[in-house]
Amino acid sequence: MAKVLTSIVLLSSSAQAFVARPITSRNDINSHSSLKMSEIEVVSQPDKDFLEKKGVFNWGTWGCGVSKFPWTYDQSESCYLLAGKVTVTPDDKSLKPSEFGKGDFVTFPAGMNCTWEVSETVEKHFMFF
Image 1 (cartoon, rainbow, N blue to C red):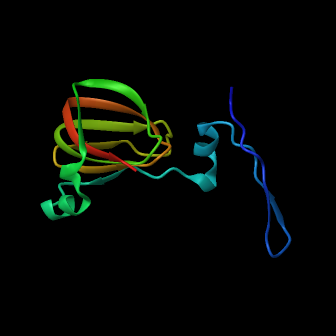
Image 2: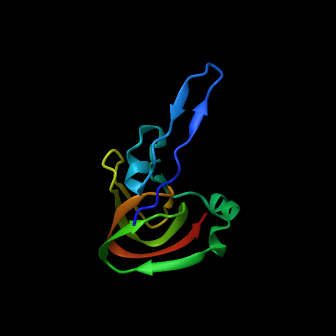
Image 3: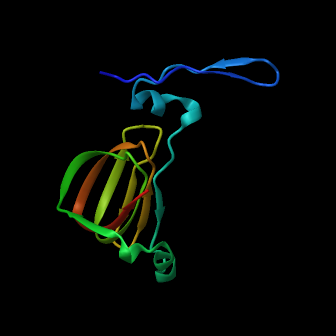
């Protein structure tokens, strides 16, 4: 069963009303132009100082063999790839697929639905926020 958020009415100083429509699914959020999903951010080969400032080496680790699978980001995630090669394709076709690999630092936006295609076994440090 879909949950419906309550509609609200916002009044501006010019007394024009904006009526928000109910949001019943993640697709409603992704398709609403004012709620445009952020792109995947890739920092290619950041230096050790960048990684240490973020505390990357104290984060959890995760690994995955060659595979293809759907994924949903309920929270934002940053990760640093220790090994591997990946292409992540957002379900929202207005967003570009991102390719990244060993030594790259990547941030995924909360709310993104995507497909991970792991072409070389991955090991990464990760942190959800």
